[in-house]
Amino acid sequence: MSLRKSALIMAGLSALVIFGILVKNQSMQNDLPPKTTADQTVKSNQNLENKSNIFQSENNQTPSPVVRGREIDKALIVQERKAESLELQVKEQARLLEAKQNQIKQLNIARNIVQSMRNDLPPNATADTAVKPNQNLTNALIAAGIPVQEPKNKAELDALNQLIESKIQTLSSSVQTGNLKIQSAMKQWNNAVKYMSDLMKTRKSINDSIKQSLTP
Picture 1 (tube, rainbow, N blue to C red):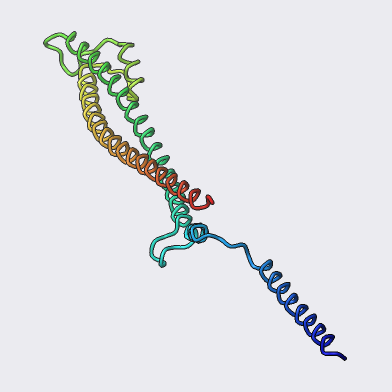
Picture 2 (cartoon, rainbow, N blue to C red; picture 1 turned 180 degrees about the vertical axis):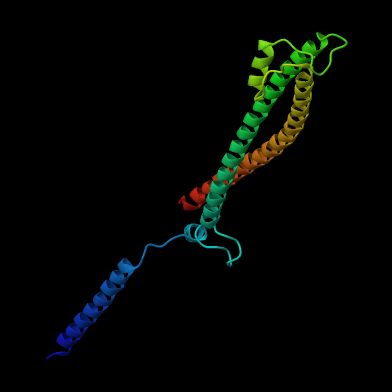
């Protein structure tokens, strides 16, 4: 074999080797992921971090937004039940108060009738002095819830007057206590509603934060 032919063969082999290396390098480059800029990398890492933080706490000290949201949901349920219970208390106290005020109104009517009947008695009337029946007095006593018979003499009329006075004083004291209970229940109800409003605002803020964290 001549030297010229040997040189050509060697040159051809070298060219094949170089071509193979180039093809291999190009294939490796095609298999690599696309290049990203530094800003894209930072943004991607931030998105991953944000999505992770909504479920994980920071150094196990501050609850994550998702955990905080669940805690607020539980607190809202408790406060809602408390507000409903207080509202029922206020309505019940108001109903009792109205009933007592109506009873006092009827007792005052009965007292006025009794006083008028006493004034109609003669100056020298005794305990046995008879009194005339009065249907208005009977109706007022029934409306006031006093199960007593209509008085037949001055003694019974005086006793009825004392009974009415005593019931009016007792009911008036009860009304004052009822007013205080209503005021207390209303204050607690207002506080519960205000706290619920604050919790709902916080819950909305957390929801907005979670949505922002999940936005690419």
